[in-house]
Length: 305
Ligand code: GUN
Image (cartoon, rainbow, N blue to C red; front, side, top):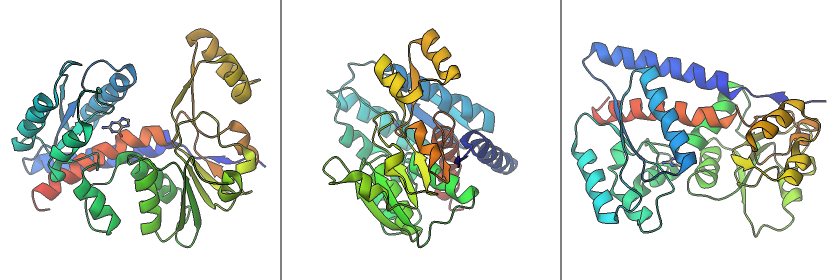
């Protein structure tokens, strides 16, 4: 048996075209959703993500602008930038790319974003709205993971869901979304005892740990759906071999680039899972598609629609 591979690229494309149609309809009413992305300093991964966010905005017709303050910006200066964006009527969504440099108080910055413009869904007001099943803005990556389940007709209600990882950005909101969908949810973390056995209970297993290939086939119940949220750059040869030995395409990229992108799920999971998301091409593309959807939602909600 070999797992069905859930194609995030296609699902993201579908969502983007739905969003583009909405943007077009709004344009007829004289409204153009606007997104401001704040990228502090020169973190290479963040630069790649932000480029994708700006490019996707252009594709769906969302106005976007990028703010790139220097690495040494103070919390107060960054607060001033965020407050300015809060006050602008042409900006519906504000996204402060993480991580921020160590001298900046990240919690203070995320708290300053107007919850109505918080397209990342990181503000405590939006976290509270999600946890009490009220309408709000939901973090893009976990929302994308759920969207994959919904659009591939994988039921959530009544299922055993196990989320590995408890980050504020992915693990916790993913658990909350699954709970709101009436799954029975277990959240695991570094202190969880007998992790493989807990994971084997899952009908839906969400891996959001940040360790390449940690979830191997012995963590997975036969037929389970496995959602891989990991984005790990593998540069070590032994690590590469543990994950991808014999995979000609991967060997080629690794040889030419010196690295390859790996999820938290080991490829051997495909031998037991019923369905799984690949990396790259799974949850990743959904993150940006959901950001576009959130920006349009924020634009509508802010105008009382
Ligand atoms: N850094 C890594 N993932 C994210 C994300 O979803 N949003 C923001 N703002 N920063 C990130």
